[in-house]
Amino acid sequence: MTRKVSFIASFVLAILAAGGAGMPAGAASMLGSAQAQDAASQSAIARKIGTIKTINGNSITLSPESGPDVTVSVEPNARMVRLAPGQTDVKAAPPIQLQDLRVGDKVRVRGYASANATTFPALEVVVITGSAVAAVGEQIRQDWQKRGLGGPVTAVDASAGTVTISTASVAGKKSITIHTSASTVVRRYAPNSTKFEDAKVSTLQDVHVGDQLRARGDRSADSGDLTAEEIVTGRFPNVAGLIKSVDASAGKISVQDLASKKTVELKITSDSQLHQIPAEMAQRFAARLKSQLPPGTPGAGGNSGARSSASAEASGQTATGGSPAGGAAGGGMGAGAGGGARAGGGFDLQRMLDGTPAVTLADLHKGDAVAVLATEGTATDGSTVIKLFSGVEPILQAAPNGSQAMMLAPWSLGGAPGGDASQ
Image (cartoon, rainbow, N blue to C red; front, side):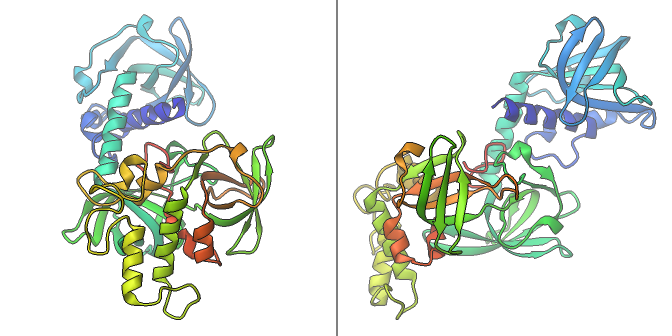
């Protein structure tokens, strides 16, 4: 949480320096006046953004997000202000004194450029409060939820500035074309992190088929296109198979992946989300898988009517499109998170899965069938479990090669960046 707050605060203060260019909706309005204030003396003026580490008289040690600490000397005539929640004009921000600064405050300092990158004479100090950080973070999160969508990448045309993704639901899949422009912010998750604040600035050239992508922007009338203001991508492998070993002391498991026939070593951390799919829910998923197999395939549904019925049952609805099986409308496949019902109607597979019972590493055993979403990892550090679902034996039996079991995906990027990819 501390790292997330630090990321949002740095993000806000960076916009103070940049005048709001490329900023997600909901935050740019708060800081839109900064550019005019910084217009003069661009060649002689420099800026630093970071967290106050120490204060000694008029000397501040600033810890930036990257690079060495910077010693800031606050000039006697320096302008010092504090941004309040919702404030949009730095000029109108209330003045503060040097003694009002605190270790841990997030600040942007502005002053004359120095030949020594680790020293900085400050003419202006802008402090952003914790409540202002929270307010901007909430605006960003809500905008991602309102105008964001995501799914696996199926095509990339960097020259045309477009990416095609496939969005999945129990109703089926739909292709959506994401359109980018020079102002679109593109970020990519770090290889072993699901934290949005760890994502690095990237380009469309770094986006590949099979990546997971989430974009925020304006959709077309038919929802087949989205003009993106911001994109975040990453590669999050799926593993489905049987657990070969569990090392609770090291926080590791090994899984025999059905698709690749390889043993995959996976780390489990405090951030890993472990769930068990109830038996009845797993059976319904399996029924849906069987209904989607081509006729004549072993295990496929016998006829179109049976396939339609199984698919409807798997989505928690009756074959006639009535209320979800087992009760009132909006219920869905049993318990948890509103049974997967979206606010305002519809069905949210992600929410339903996240509502399944939580388990711990101690609940996992050799021979258990699991479906896992993991980080990309590195050659030296391996992959880390983002989400793991046990109790998937019926699903793997319905899809013995493991590939169709990825109907549970995309789990990654299901929530709004600004949170975690796994939300």
